[in-house]
Image (tube, rainbow, N blue to C red):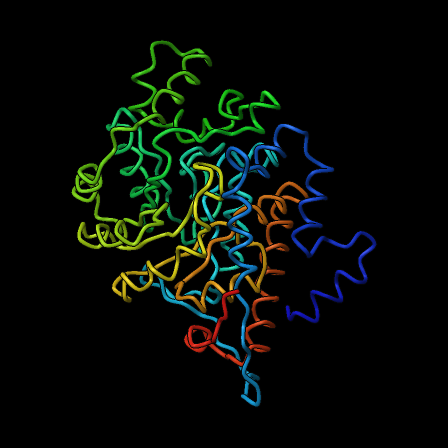
Length: 377
């Protein structure tokens, strides 16, 4: 489907599917209850990090080139030993059963249909095995939240290997939960409501460690295990010894940490501030990207995550050196509005806007996008 087809589809529809992120968010707010919407939409503390993510994109302006043949576009990328038609990924977003009863399998099916890699969260409503069964031909990565009981972490990685996942995405910025003001205000915790039980309740190490089979025991154990402030590079090294899968680190913002990642044999870096949901007052992910790209110097893939809401955002991230770009909140809103179909529509809209933006900037490939001149205000 071309971008013209998508625009005409929305123009002709009796109830047009939201295209702009602001409209998408507004529609999701009208559909979801206050607690779930606040959990998805909000950032930590006073939300400076959330704002920094958007400000970072708005500070960069493209200087386009003209009189170039952009009639044929090549938007393909190579990751995980495979070639994909778009530079997009599904960012790991947990507890999708909170937005739609079909949850993570619906997102994975959309990813499979669109040939976009899907990163599944540890705190999923459905297990990794459920997702693998729902979308067996998708490229799936497993995002690992470390557990205080480290055997749970290794068990989940082993399960991901058996379920056909292509890589492990170890999130390093969640040694404890961020200060989520909106969730406190709404007295809302999806963890306590059981929306994160998919992977935990199907893990033999986790369930064997429970004092009893009550729901309260499950909740208490999950909350206890996601608090792990002792995590260091030694744990990363041990994880590498425990799996043959590539390991990507998600949460890198400082160039020195990117250098340490390389020294520790990491296979890829995801530049991310957790969508502004962990530490408030943090640099926008896009602002952190150039210095990390410089340190990495092409030795491993660098993926940009956090604050990416549109196709033009994708183009700016690629122009600043990202090898791929992860989409989070937009697809979650699409899931809330229309399940799998909503996820597909959101990702198609972002991709079509990216293609139009790429061509109008005077580039016809990802390689040419990286040569675009960006001016920072």
